[in-house]
Image (cartoon, rainbow, N blue to C red; front, side, top):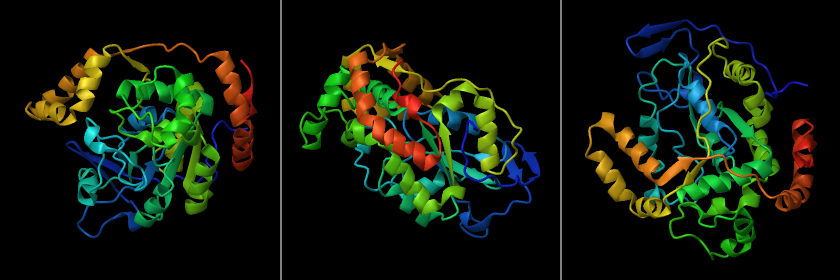
Amino acid sequence: MHRLRSFQESPVALVRVTHCGNRVVCGNVDRGPCWRGEGQMPNPNFFIVGAPKCGTTSLYEYLRPHPELFMPPMKEPHFFGSDLQIATEMLERPYIRDKAAYLALFDEAAGCKRLGEASTWYLFSKLAAREIKAFNPHAKIIIMLRNPIEMIYSLHGQFLWTCNETLESFEQAWEAQADRRRGGRIPPESHFPQGLQYAQVASYTEQVKRYLEVFGRSQVMIIFFDDFVSDTPEVYGQVLRFLEIDPWFRPLFRAANVAKRPTNIGVKRFLKRRPKLQRGVIAMLPPRLRPHLSRMMNRLASSRIERPPMSEPMRARLREQFAAQIEDLGELLSRDLLHWCAST
C-alpha cells in the first residue's frame, strides 16, 4: 500500500521556468479561472487546510522555495471559514478578513503556476470548504492527518504556549470541554475558544468527508503525518506531482514549529493581553529588524522542550473514545488506521 493517498494522479505538466532578478516567471501555464483577469494578479489555487499539529508548517516551509510556486510569507491568513470565532485582535499577527488585503498577499506571484496558502483551521470549519469552492472551484486541497490522540495532546501544548489554554494538565483541559461549551472556564487570553473543544477538533471523518464531497476526490490529497515523517522526500515529491509542478525539486528538509513551553507565563500573558502594544513596538522598527524583535520576545517567554508523554490511563481512555471514528476514517480513505488505537 502506498504511504500517501492522492486519490488521482494527474500527468505532470512540463513548464518552462525562467528567472528575472528575484521574480520567477513560469511559461506555458494554463492560468484558467484562478486568474483575476488580463493584467491582474492571480488568485490562490491550492490550500493546505489542516489539521493543526500534523506537519502543515513543515510542508509550507518546504514548498515555499519551489520556483514554480508561490506561498506568502504569512502562514495561516484564515481568510475563509466565516464560522471560526477567532479574536484576531489578540494575535501578534491578526488573521485577514478583508478580501483586498488577502489578495494582496499574492501580489508578488505573477507568472507562477501554483499559488497557495496554509490555514490549519479550514479543515475544522464547517463553512470553509464551500467558501473556498465558491472562490476557486478548481482549487486543489491538501489535508494532513495525524493520530488524533497525538494531535490533540500536541495541540494542548501549543495552546499553552499561545495562552489560548491555561489548564496545564491535559486531563483537566479534556474534562473542561463541557463547561467551555457553555461558555465557562474560558481563559481571558483565549483567542479561539472553539479550539478548546479538543474532541471536536480531532473528529476527522466528517471534516474530511466535507472536502471530498465539495471538491471531489481528484482535487483532494490526504497526507498522513507518519508517512510524512518517515519518508519526507517521497511524500514531498507526491505533493509536487499532485500540484502538477516539477516533481524533482528538493528543498532542505528540517522540522518546523517544534513544541514550545511557556517558561515565563507572566511575560507571555502580558504580551498576549497587549497585542496592540506588542505590534506597535515592532512597527516602530525598520522592517528588517521586526522579525528579530518578535522572536526575541517569544524566546523570553518560552523554550523548546521535549514534552512528557500522555499518561497511559488517559491514552487508554482516548483510544476507546476515538476507536469508532478512526475505523470510519479508515473506511472512508481505504486505509488501515487501527494502529492508531493500538496500545503502546
